[in-house]
View 1 (cartoon, rainbow, N blue to C red):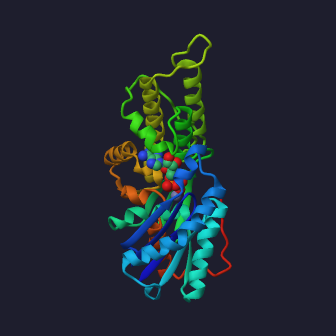
View 2: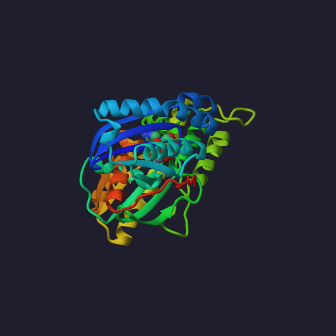
Length: 335
Ligand code: KG4
Ligand code: ZN
């Protein structure tokens, strides 16, 4: 069965055609990122307008690339939330229109859960597993018993990991989005020059990254090469040391809590998705921790870590097989 996936939760417009939840025939992404860069973050109205412009030609192109026609499709799968409301509305309205006009079943898919489908394009993964989603909007741990049974075990109580990377990059004057820029800079950092710690929380599987972001801000403002007026004149090497220490602290915390979730739930598999999972240092730390604890870790290919419609089509297919059809009254759920 062919599923058309639609994803418009943030700045990426993405359309994919996936066969039987496994073979990605096309997965196209148009991003409005270049329009947001100068503002240092995504501007919702600009993102919605770009989705409107991109979505129709992108869908035509996705069908062409997959060498299929609309009449070959079996299901339309779409993210209805969480995300930016105006952006979600464009994708959801588009998906509803195709579903209505071509009499195709519509499946509404949760954005965070869709990220955990991404590693399944590489290999089969046995249930149950612990799902770790590390993205710009979320940092969450789930116990996943099947595609329709997710139990939230822990989540961030303030900033998401990607959000913290973006904010720290801004503090360091690096640009947006911050994740890849920090990763690149951290590679030049000197270990053990600086140490940061993530927040300690009563609920052991929750995360907090807002304190470490503030610690970075104070480090930059007051402690790095202060000049006569007390303002920082920060050198490249000092920036790299801060980026390194920040990245280490965040990823040690994520790796430790992911292992703890596996141990607490006596589960042997960890599945990881979301934009931050592109980061090679995080992948290395998760791989190291999992061999230490005897856990199998499943990571998505980088192109499926970031927002994309293939993961939406994949999860939509599995939910359809379980009989979960949405109707045309389905609304967005921004948070
Ligand atoms: O999953 P995603 O594409 O969108 C959301 O659902 O939020 O993730 C985007 C986030 C951004 O915060 C970005 O800075 C972060 O993923 N990111 C990274 C890396 N690449 C993207 N964070 C750390 N290291 C990276 N290499
Ligand atoms: Zn996402």
